[in-house]
Length: 320
Image (cartoon, rainbow, N blue to C red; front, top):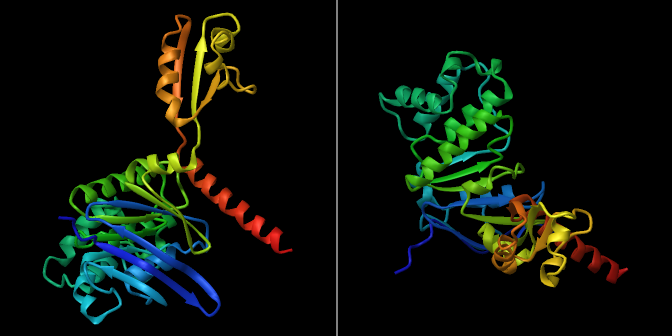
């Protein structure tokens, strides 16, 4: 028996007058899954998050979160199980970090004597207990972002929506943030992670969604997206033989066809040929070193975006 997805969109879209902010989106998010949501400004990422939060209602189609429409009155009680970090966080400037977080803990329905204790624990989790008694107006951008993350983590949410969570974070804070994401996932939380900063994201997500102009360009695991994009695997190999790798594979027509002119020690190999090429290379007695590099998330993202832009220009050219 299949599990009911935690989040489900079926042909869901949002229009403002003539503008389609999100076009007929179908997707699902399972329990304990991390979904990366990627696209340029205006791609529809924030609109999709707002639909899932129930802040706005779909113009057409269906949105369900934890089995109900998130914009319905019935969904009110489940909102304490949802955490959200907006792209631009803002807090009451005159309050201390501890006061702000204690207020949000109570606001989310945890209004008991442990609210302050919970707040301190969350501030510790994001590494700003040292500043918890300082007014928020004295906080740097990175500190405000950490406070925003602490707010999103209240109550160990079942569903977490994070819009540009690493903006303003230094490398150590970014590493700690992803550790927390991994921990929440292992505890069964589902996460939608929206980011412009693609390096470092890919090992923490299960699937990726790529949007542009409110439309879905691609969705799947990184491996599936690589196959769809048909981007080559880069194999860098050095040979002790005179002439380098070029000389070593001179008699092998199959290997030679993968060599690049610009980099004589580099092969550009289709994904499905990777293993057979590696086996052939390993048989070369003169081989000194080998390095294999599949297309990363950023390269896959750029591929789908470029392909979409080319298709758009093609249509415009045909209409002119």
